[in-house]
Amino acid sequence: MAEIVTVARPYAEGLFRLAKESNAFAKWSDVLNVLAAVVVHDDIKEVVTNPKFSASQVKSLLSDLLGDKVDDQVKNLITTLQENGRLVLLPEIAAQFEQLKSALNSTVEARVVSAFPLEGAQLQGLVAKLETRFKQKVDAQVSVDPSLMGGVRIEIGDEIIDASVRGKLQAMAFRLKS
Image (cartoon, rainbow, N blue to C red; front, side, top):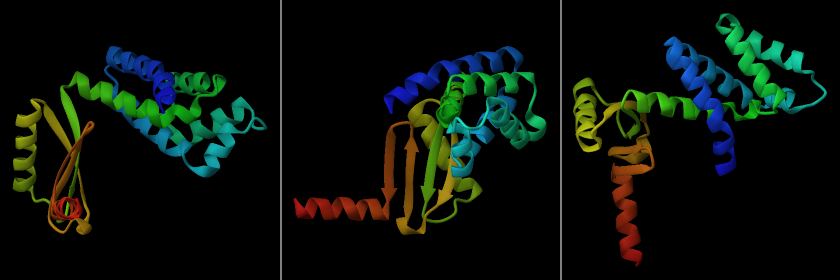
């Protein structure tokens, strides 16, 4: 795992610098997210990692999948990753690019899982509390998981805040067993 992160970092940092110079963060986020999603698909992964497919075939396939998002810079990225056998690193490159982008904007991404859909005012209040606690702007990605029974579970970086009913019941069960 650490090796993947280490190998992907220079690519993410290079793309970040390129995006910053040309103010093209949205373009590169979009391109990287599409490529990352594509290369993890089993059929595409087999083509990308199989030496029987030429570099031009792989480049053509990925360019076709990107459609109108392809320009010379994107082609250069695909070629560079292809030549170095690093296309499978695209999910990690995309993740690191997004982290660098968030750090530039002093924004932290929070994954909020709620037992019930959060309404506008509820979500705004939760985000405001998180921004106060973390002293950064918070970009909340919200999903619903009814198995939580109530409350929320929040992941920000490596910190997890489990304020769900399920989490509290599990903690209580653990204490009773101890």
